[in-house]
Amino acid sequence: MVNSPHFASAWPGLFRSGWSLGVFVGLWLGSMDCVRAQRSLPLAASNLGVESCRDCHEAEVDAWERTTHATSIEKVIASELTQRLAEGMHLQPDGVVSHASCVRCHFTEESLASSVQITAGVSCESCHGGARDWIDEHNRKSLTRGERVQISRDRGMVHPSSLVDVAKGCFECHVVDDEQLVNRGGHPAMSDDFELYSWYSGEVRHGFLIQNSEKSVKSHTEELQPIPEARKRMMFVCGKLLHLGHTLRALALCSDPPVDKSGLPIRLKSGAYTMGVQHAMTARSLISDLERIQSMVEIPQINTALGVVAGLSFITGEQPAMAAASRELLRLADEFEKTVQGDDVRSIDSLIPAARRNRGH
Ligand code: HEC
Ligand code: HEC
Ligand code: HEC
Ligand code: HEC
Image 1 (cartoon, rainbow, N blue to C red):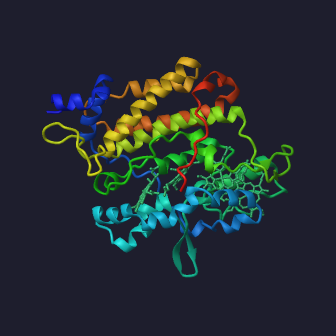
Image 2: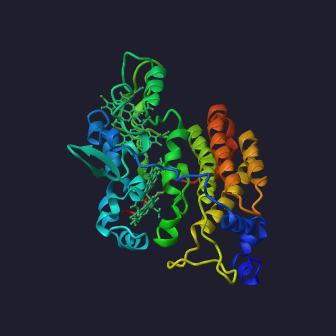
Image 3: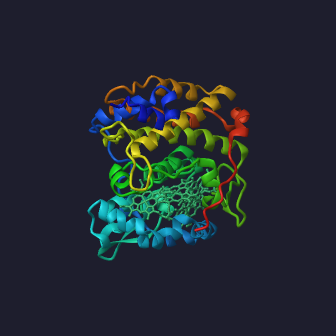
């Protein structure tokens, strides 16, 4: 019944690609035992809050306060979508925003006095890790730069010296992995056109430090520092690998059928397809992006990545294979960052989009 002509004509683009039909079957038949939700609830007890950064990072805090991450908190709480999600997922309406399944992506919690409270939207510690155990070490002058970075990472800091480490967080939140939220509640399945460089370099950008020498701590400036060309390329390529890795991971968590009894793709109330179908379409477009990069420059990790996804059989229950492919893509992003320099991949510059303007929240 999946072969029904309705299905094929509704999906001409996907159909032509050869593997997509199998994605649907695979999604449908598989089990989801081997993968868990990507982002666990952040530990309230290790969060210190944005004010604890302000003394030293005034410029970063000012920039953050103007972002959607900081300002959306009331909007999310008051949103009609939030009410619908509460109904669709059978959650207490007034408790919905403190529910773990929302907090992990939308809010920052702290342990205050005797209770855990939401104190911000997506904040410094959502991206850099709860600071309790590293705040005093990450800037310690008596250590070398290398020691500072290592010790603070060991203590839970998500340090921007590894772009991949910090960027993983973006995809954990911006690629939604909870089918209940999307298929029952009507939550968006993803941020539609998310691309790491352009989404970072608009409102989110907050580079105000300059390196004096390898040894000393960095100094603060009031001017936003330009993002070096080499870093832009790293963001673009790492972003594509991470995006595909996280999309496959979300696909591995899907178990709802993508089509109805007559073989037509199921439409949610909003008219959108189910989460699995939306992610399958994104995966396909990310694979084309990787092919485009491959046609412009030789990058071993991109070749391997394309081999990994080409080798995926989408015919039967494939969740374990998708989960394994996802892990391999995340590993390749890491290896790419460690072994390739931005200057080696100049020829992709024409692919990199401009900084994104925000939606004007
Ligand atoms: C007492 C001052 C101080 C406080 C408080 C502080 N920082 Fe820092 N931070 C610094 C200094 C100085 C550096 C540069 C360290 C270096 O050069 O290795 C830094 C570096 C960083 C970096 C890494 C930048 C890089 O590439 O070296 C991040 C991320 C960061 N801080 C986040 C935070 C967050 C989040 C908070 C609040 C939870 C915070 N900091 C609180 C002084 C501080
Ligand atoms: C996996 C991460 C994730 C989880 C879990 C999640 N959200 Fe979201 N949510 C997002 C992202 C990312 C967006 C922005 C999507 C976009 O770019 O369009 C969003 C958008 C929204 C919006 C629209 C905001 C606006 O400004 O229009 C509301 C409301 C919302 N979420 C409520 C919730 C509620 C309530 C829950 C829990 C029941 C929840 N979300 C769980 C990631 C998540
Ligand atoms: C803890 C989860 C989380 C993390 C980590 C995260 N985001 Fe977000 N981001 C969100 C949510 C949720 C929204 C939507 C808020 C809303 O619309 O109410 C959002 C909104 C945005 C927006 C504004 C979108 C618009 O429509 O204008 C940008 C830009 C953005 N994120 C970029 C990033 C980048 C780049 C990273 C990584 C460096 C990142 N985000 C990491 C959860 C997260
Ligand atoms: C949405 C995720 C996100 C949020 C929220 C966030 N950061 Fe960052 N931060 C990043 C990323 C990604 C980088 C690395 C940028 C790069 O590589 O150019 C970074 C870099 C930094 C740096 C180093 C910048 C430089 O000049 O070298 C500091 C310091 C920092 N963040 C502090 C903060 C503080 C303080 C806050 C809260 C006010 C905060 N960050 C909020 C993602 C985030």
